[in-house]
Length: 454
Ligand code: TYD
Ligand code: MG
Image (cartoon, protein in one colour):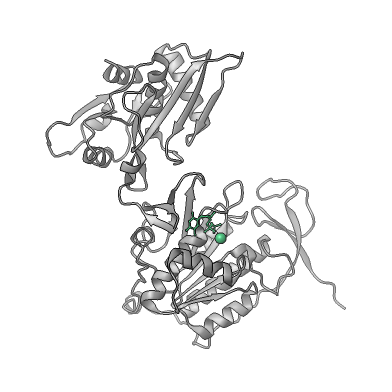
């Protein structure tokens, strides 16, 4: 009897080795190599359709590719104007963030217009899904629930049913019997995704895969899946807040600049028409330490309040805390304020929070964070009709940011009158000369302080 051939695969990055290694040669992680049986992949085609032949590009027929609209306009926009036939989508996000809820709503939307949708769940029972669908008010005869983990059975069933859309919830619970390792391992996840990709491409049925994100932010450990699929969406948010952002990380059929904003309500996810208004609803007026930032989420401009609290420390080491912002960026800004502006912050605790649960990773937040800290430190409020934006450099200079116009326009629509922006953005600004907008260009943090604290 021939010996079964095995290989060792890194559960983080998918690197392979013929023998066990303590440290993965690919990503350098320790103790991630797991033994898997080396299986020769069967490349048999799933359908009886003839194998494609090379042909001139202008002979390719695209007329039969109308995009499926889900009826959830935020979702349709993020994926580039509807789901393309044969596309394989990956929706990633933290457990419990609302991926199943979103996809159930998408499924119901498609089922209403285009016919049966196959919702395959390896995580929840059919009854659980029904209860959720009832709660969402999305019960439809066209919504087929299939609780199964074996991918071979799933593909056979899907080929037979010929639904308009297939949803796999989640890829970590699926397994392919050809591979002996457990569901959720790199080998299984990769093999299952490969099978689903062949299914989607050959049948032309668009398929969505839900993937849980590991603690370091990768889908199923490896980023391997991201290059296999056509569209990668991340569903993000802070679980204790209602806001959720759907972001396109990769899209073969559209731009990755779009993002959709939802709010998790009692009856499922609702589209938010005016997120800035909601985010600023509870803003205190005339309170020191509060500054409004015009933040760019994809191509969408959002107004977010930055709050800072600076108080004298009771201990030897001052505490610094950043919620919704990068901690290291906060430390850097405190150092700039200390050295370039001359504020004595070494004996001050500093807490900074981006209100609403958004994770802000944009340099334009630097200046508002710095001004919020100064405002709290000096106990002087910033005028509540002011919006601040700008990147801060290590010498205390304020650097240019992208799409200043879009940010100003959004803020002006909500009644903001004063804008503190980088001096470099001032010349290129093409705004209609509408009355009453006071736009101030600043070249350094000190200038910004002069403009704000008069
Ligand atoms: P779920 O879609 O199960 O998350 P995931 O599939 O990403 O793990 O949703 C999880 C949370 O959403 C759950 O904890 C409760 C909340 N939720 C609502 O607030 N309202 C609703 O109508 C639904 C269905 C869920
Ligand atoms: Mg789920």
